[in-house]
Length: 613
Ligand code: G6P
Image (tube, rainbow, N blue to C red; front, side, top):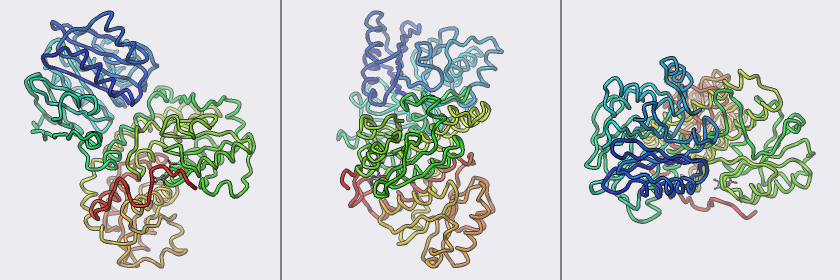
């Protein structure tokens, strides 16, 4: 949820930057900072807490200058302290960096820099970036090239803005992967940079959106864009309309598209501040749970509806494996009608994007009456499900406008992964090494998510071949069985095509009767413990002339010889694989619905928040 705003032009930079950051306040943050260049000198102000603290600081010690950058930070690496707030500055005080995202290999880079005499002043992953740029600068590289060389050394997804007293007329912005957007606003003799368009919309409507692995150098007079491999690019300039809805949708045709495409970022936001990657320790203070209570827990019951229920079905695998607690899942709408057995050593976990789904709230009430501990995972802050639970975890996905849930599906799974790690830590079911490994796996996730999203054009082509079919079967097994359910749900919701999700092993007990040359069969067949079994399901579907589409692991050529179409996802640890395998299915449902001319954001008969039984 970090915000970035940069300015270069004839006006005073500080008020423009502070106002821009204010417009991003809704995204949440815990500290803020600003750097401005005056007379070739870099001046920095940083404060913990709200922007007012920074504003007061700037009033007491004003910052004058026509080029600068500001940042609101939501902690990932390192506590909420002034020294961890952005911008970060090099040892010689000449280079400044702000950053959104996670530098996955920062520990390694930090050690290398330390061995070369660099002294670190923060606990952040970001600080390695500024020291690397300064090192390249000291070797005589100009600011753009020093930044480019540095980015080539970073692993993970990141959005970065850089400035330097050595070339005080320019800002460099880079986007690596999908950690967060970088929007460039083109003004008259001035230029703006922002992580989110609303920060700069009052100044200009002419925007450039950086794609992954692109960078731009901006001065008051213009800009130059290139790839990270130094190939020049002619950017596409978008004229953003004045209507506020189109403005919020930005470069995307639908909110659902925007929300799918921002998942690398929303997942990063979900992880933020909750895990220490060096130790693997998780902190979930809003859960209000102590070690003794965690050790006493005998069972978790997850209650939810729709997409949130499918998320709970994935979470069950995580909680059982990492925290060694049996988990049941149930429909919110069914739970209270079966007189459930609960006691104070059971926790009922309600998952609900809106926090207002009446069936889920009713299940929570049942749990409350029966004396169970009550937790919720919610996206909407202050919602009923958040208020009425004993403890909660927020998804931190930002507003989800499309009726069909996408980014809140993946972020609520990440929340359950964090919950499983946290309970595992408190209950002593995980060793320190395991904790670190699971944390390292999580750190890689946003980048992997971004890579799947980058394959959207191929999935759009596949949709072109499939959109006329009227029935689909989705098959998955193990932790990817809920993804078959979710894939089918997405297609039904927005394209009005009949689709069923099934555990693959059940195919032979019924659905197999449906298979013929008119039935596309979507199989999730990544390289995991059930890979061979899934291959055999594919063979059976093919033997009956079904059209087989597989979601498979990158590099798996064998599957290409078995299935009619393949959508690849990068290799990932089994527990996190559902977060990747669901993405092609979301995208496919979306492109099919668009091709059929459906109202993607507001599908018929559906509501974003269902407050009636
Ligand atoms: C509605 C929405 C679904 C959503 C479900 C549960 O049916 O159309 O997209 O999954 O409600 O919503 P919740 O807010 O509780 O997650």
